[in-house]
Length: 336
Image (cartoon, rainbow, N blue to C red; front, side, top):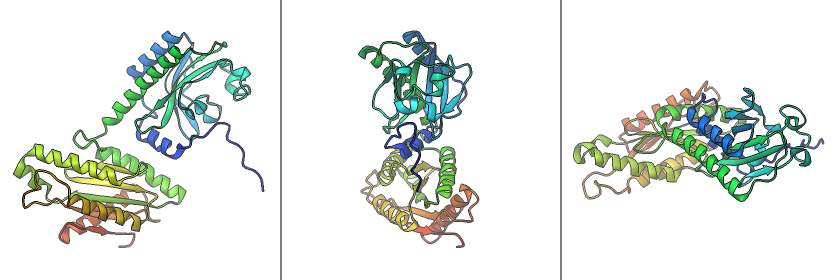
């Protein structure tokens, strides 16, 4: 049996979650932006290097969100990316002379154009704790190692890049619940649907409503209703794993995408969430109102042509649960 070809770079232990986190920041392919351009210029001025880049490391390539000195180059294979090594560590990676470093001495970016000799990269660490890429400074001449102060300065700049990425991600989140809005949920849903189909893994979708949510607003006012939404969103977060994805799809409607989860497992989650909702405290606690939810559950089917098919089936199941008296979870699978 032939042995596997070793990967030319270290693969982070959190790689699957890291790639999902990168995907959910929706930064790949962003148009040129002055905020990132200024940070690149600031790094170039501070460190005096001819090349600076904000690099995001995908599964097979690194993509430059912004750069200086790369002659319009927008990406390189991950196999030749210095940043693919930098994201595997916890701090700034410094290579004083790439020709003397066995990891990079034969690298095409060292022996060929642009002829990298010095590299320093600070990881772009997300709020979920994953390194999505780096802010790196590069020279075509060897340099002494960065001092501790210089490494701290480079990391501070990287943190500013990450803060900007996080702020942009939040524009796709509901300001009340903090959950992704419908458009973001549909985009990620399609990506996860494609991934599950390609990897032959199960994928479950739960669509659910807070039953009679308008009664909260009508009886206690919109501020009370917003408080219920915030508390409920926190409850939902407690039932999802990091790889799962939850979003607010409408007024009182939510979606929960359960990754690599069977229908039986998803139903157990849905029922636990339904039971927990009934015990959620709020302005209604000492009244005749009890919070409860109706939900529709479905899973990826061989005949599905897109995520919309799965979503439509889960929504039909939700309408069935409502029509049967609410406060229940209905399940519809392919052919039902």
